[in-house]
Image (tube, rainbow, N blue to C red; front, side):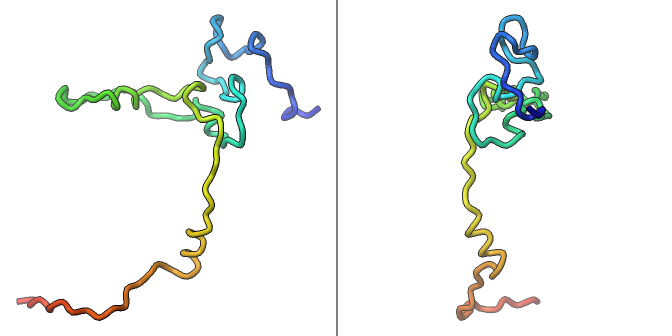
Length: 112
């Protein structure tokens, strides 16, 4: 059995959680939830940086700002990832964007 094939720890055996069973800063989403096809950044919420409240004018404080100031945890990360096809974008890369070749009927503006 290689290091990547190790069985997942049971809830009581998880050394990365505190005594109450809540996740620590190094916990993985897959340790707490059954995940399917998620990128590594979703499995490791501790990788996200730059959260916290800065000073803002009291008139412009919103509840969305408060939610956005909280760093993600294993409980707020998605457990599945379904990527969209890049077929349209690949086609644009090969042939280029649409260009309008219609007749220009606008008046020319004087540069004087």
